[in-house]
Length: 104
Length: 222
Image (cartoon, rainbow over all chains, first blue to last red; front, side, top):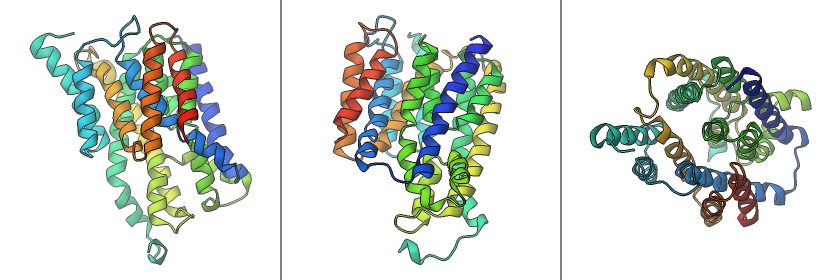
């Protein structure tokens, strides 16, 4: 990615994040209804990101080694294994399947 | 009773935070490696960790860029994930010292992990100030150092697919999601978000599925 575009990405995300982190301590009172609603954003977006990451160029779920990788990571997360170990196990699953079975 | 506990020393606070700090370092390093694999300039990757300091949002933005989405989509995906910090900011507002400006600036080092530890160490409705600030500053330092390490390691590691780094993205988002699924509302939002994203993905440009998921999340939240 070209430098100016990367800078735009960084400054855009940083600016919005700054405003969000500053708003609570500055305002102190924001209607509870607003915070309750926004609580639904993180789970919905993260689940959507998992789904999107598993789709191919045509936008349909693609059967490749990412599927078993996600199953392994999710299973470990359900067993309360530390977050970073779940991620590494997922990546190693994909790498292992590619190396041993020459899968996609 | 949390409120009855004696005041904790900085050393005790740091000891409690050490395992988290280690995980954040590795998380930062993996961000640096994946960002380098996505051909982002190293300086911009480190600058992002310095200025944004929010793992899930940074990975989400990077995931969109890696998948070929636009810069605007990437910014929005990350920013929407950070909306939760408005709620966290309100929860810690009374624990931060100083006037409005000082509180707003100190609020920048609040992250999920330091917030959780401060709530555990504080009184009900008032997260512990020293835990919040000491752990926040520690994790910030470690996050940036981890990112620098990752950007240096990235080019040495070679083909990201051979190492399964492309699979690290969905694995990471799922591992971030899992602890959030404590209530029925959260499960409903997650299932709804994933379903809408998958329905939209074949017919819409990148970004629209995520926007659809955000709307569903807001709608199903209560």
